[in-house]
Length: 400
Image 1 (cartoon, rainbow, N blue to C red):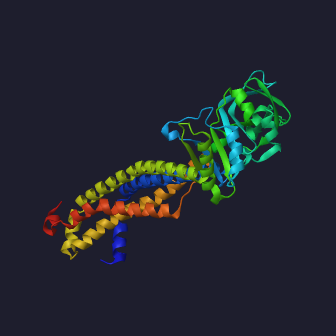
Image 2: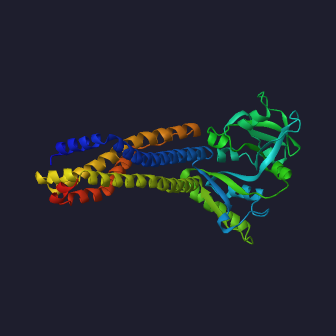
């Protein structure tokens, strides 16, 4: 059978049962749309998340902490301010190193707030945190090393927190209360640009000595650093760990270091696995659509048994009958695939629009969707087609 004859015959048969064909293609379309939407939203969310995390630190950044995978937790003797000073002095690979003592859900209020508090993450650190976390100043200035040494009660707010506390925009020089301890606002830094973070966490930065007083702790949770170059990051991490192990030889703590690239790779792998799992679940809908195609094609074989017998009597080969029914199954799946791509792209765009990240619909994803739709048509159309091709011409002609 010629290709053009096969196409015309396929279109005529589908047109003759257009309502049934549309419903069958819709089943495939829903499966394709689910897969494309999930993959596009997942990839878009992953890119947005990784992009925002990259903004929070330089590619030369790294972090030294205890080995939490072993269930370890830092104590007051795990890190010290003297450790930080010696590492910066002894390691030529380390450009900046900031210790961090932090507290979550710390209450902040102004003198005019009538006791109403705003809660934030309080980050006690040193001026080097600006380079480690990429904190551009909006107004004022960051606290200095002298402020840390003198335990001055000063605070730098991220801009969204500053707007919440001071809606009139005049935060610099104002006094706020951190756990009822007064502090003066000396600077404002940029908030994360995406709603991924700006609506989730608010930050206030204070000298680490002041934070330890307010939080009543001497525990430094981690060291955030910046290497002199991206290539020097492994050396910087190695130097930090060696110096810390020499300074705390009796400690049962294991020091570990992660570069910004390591953290991004880890997060990318985790989000990729989640997208794969959810996409696999969505693909079940496509298999259900494939079962629908097989069911409809089996019905078509039963309805057209006499037609098949007539075609065979006129000289059609089993191969021609097989091609005809397979072509119809594949055509149904491809039509459903095309509609499913549009539905999936629209759904992904809608979700990404409200979540404020771009949906990533790649040409490869669309091509894979069509290939999968064709494979479903071939797989689930093969049995009905082979059943039609195996009919006896004499028996088929007697079928009523």
